[in-house]
Image 1 (cartoon, helix red, strand yellow):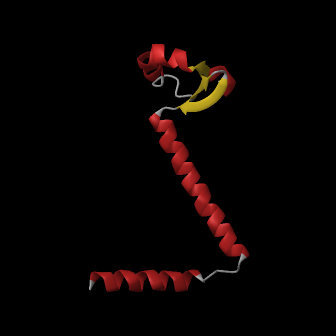
Image 2 (image 1 turned 120 degrees about the vertical axis):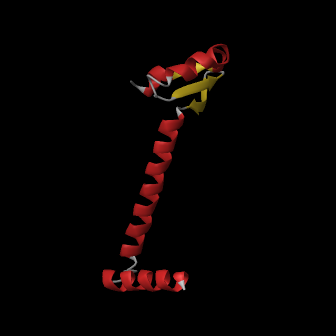
Length: 93
């Protein structure tokens, strides 16, 4: 379903909020809420929101990794694993 088909005025939201929330079970598509004809907010199923946040976190990690590669901030895997093992051993002592 297109997001443009999920645009609702705030008056619709006020009148039907429980019904809208129940429909997220079968149709988790976000709803764009308008105020005076202008898009102002998104109402989204919590599961979809969490999935989006996880995806964004992974994309941030990838972007940071790419930046570090471009800057030449690399270490051999063996060196990194040795540092992790040492850190774990030190923390268990």
